[in-house]
Length: 350
Image (cartoon, rainbow, N blue to C red; front, side):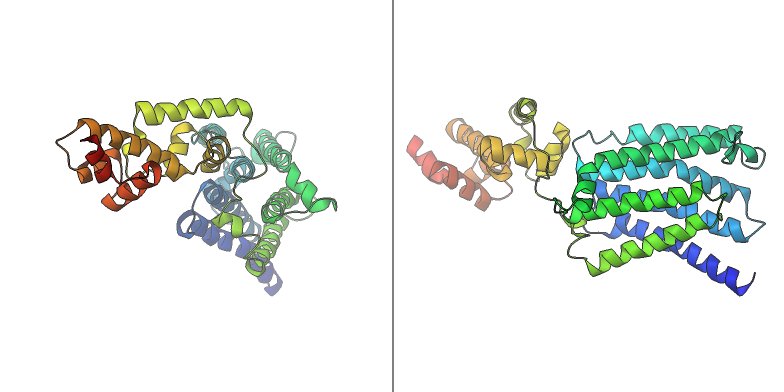
């Protein structure tokens, strides 16, 4: 391999290798891990596998066909993971298992493809040609999800490219990610007219440009990984308020969820099937109260009933049974809502 080839191999492989490390970072080491970071991690993983395969395939003749197969199959998941990343960033109102609809069928298809049409024996089917059924299917899925992602993020594209709008950090990031994946897909799609390694080089270039944006504007572009905008631009429809109200009533009145002293807004939102921001929006706008106030109202009401009817439990025991984590939080919440302490309330009953 000549020095020129070595340099091209180095730059084309660097993006893929570093992408693998960054994938691990977003999956395991970032402080605020959520659907956004997990989907980004998965997206970086499958793209990195694809471009690393391309770099080795272009410069090493004896590369394993299994490695080639894995690299090509990774393309099937690039589109879905891009879509899930965009969707989790723009509109997270969906059931926690919903992502399986986009991933599981493709993984099942991948298993059947490997068994029925292995790359070693059916190489022509994996190519972008008239007989390349798998290659055509691969690019169809990839581009379909890219255009679906563009549609989801259309508001961000307007803000970034039209002067009449002002883009925020999230808008800049989404447009950067979608266009980056689009450029890589075009590079591979047109590799027959250019060079097979162009796709890998494109990813390396885009990867480092993105990293520069992330590093030099860390307080801006990357901030939405740590903390989403409070509610985003999407508002809850009036019809949805009733559904949330019914589910909250079931969880707190029937299931007595408030008795869990470790209860968090994320736990309740998961039970309802919405994101925490939506639940916070519902409580603040519809009930005019915070999550802690909402939960403590149920706890204090339960404590009231026990103070009236249960003479075997101590005041501290009643607080614990009502879901309060400590005696001090019980007294503070009770006094805030009732104007007196639990002890004073019990004395007044006598």
